[in-house]
Length: 114
Length: 115
Image (cartoon, rainbow over all chains, first blue to last red; front, side, top):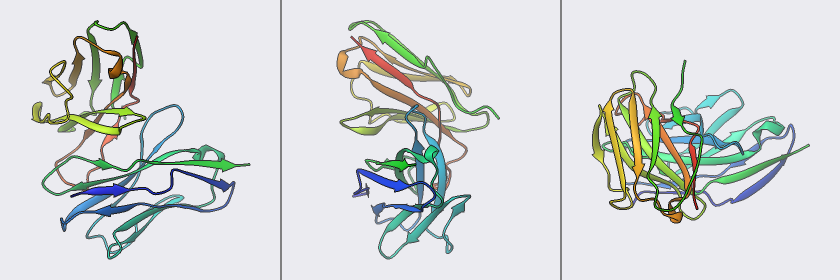
């Protein structure tokens, strides 16, 4: 069965520090994509970063990077130099070849402290 | 560039009424998805379309829910009759192609409250 697991329901981080949000996945497919989304309190879902299963390098987008460990089936999101505006819910999602449906994790609520 | 546009942003209505949610996907995107988000169940895919054709509606809760995509730039999700348990945030998303590497781009959602 395909599954995404986010084990941290909530996290705190001090402003300007880095934080890692965990995501593990389970799939028997060889080709898949992993995505992270941010949902601020205003409710919209914002796409942050993508990692493909065949990508050899970890994805980076500005202050966001993805620590992809394929053998461990983990795709952790790293946010560097946290800002107050990073306080939000973060969702990890997976899609596999042959289906275009996302499987979402339950999310991690991040609070950045001043 | 315009993103996915949903309307209304908020809807409050009484039980038994018909509710219609609207979505305009990003121009050129071939795939359109409808999701429901609740505290209890998280994000659930209800239905998705490819080139205006419904591909998978296995997530539609029951016959009270229906979705259409009459053209490439417009889709509706209808609930008739509505019930309090339908209260949720409904998202529409679109993506460019059918590859697993394509991100879905979400609208701002419709917060639906059924009294």
